[in-house]
Length: 201
Image (cartoon, rainbow, N blue to C red; front, side):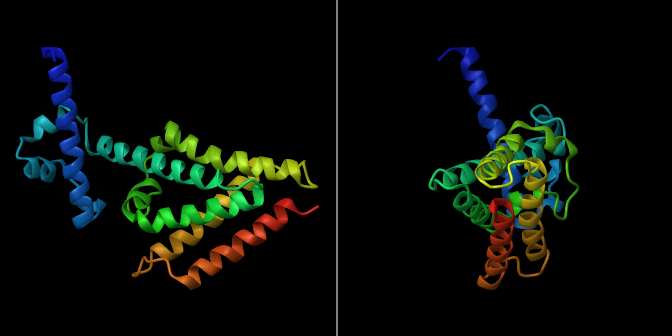
């Protein structure tokens, strides 16, 4: 390995150690507690060294935001591919979205600004667009196969996402942020109703 390649590898490894220290901070004390100073203390480097790799705390948050949307997008695509019919795909996507939210609470809170300032730039990142495209393409296919092909796919997407995010948020802001059976039943009822209106002739 040449000197240039070694430097690149060392830079990547140090950057990864910064993100690892930041993530451990979040898991221990929440997003609100995250700070460059605490990260520097955790990895035993000076604050300016951290700034050599990340412009500010928001840049670190953006890395986690991208990672979270990538994970969610992959999870949704995976369950979509397990079903043939759009209605079954939409139900599976809804359940995978719900599971992701409660199995990855820290990611979800950051991605959607629950309890912390939402990053406006996050809406423009490719990972967000890839995640939403899984939902939009499925909804458009469902519309095309329904008796109402003139329905607005993007409107229906926003309705679908609003149902999912709304139910997750209501549950998550409560003291006990666990997904229990009764809340899952509410999700199923809401999504079933959405699918009926979307696919009915």
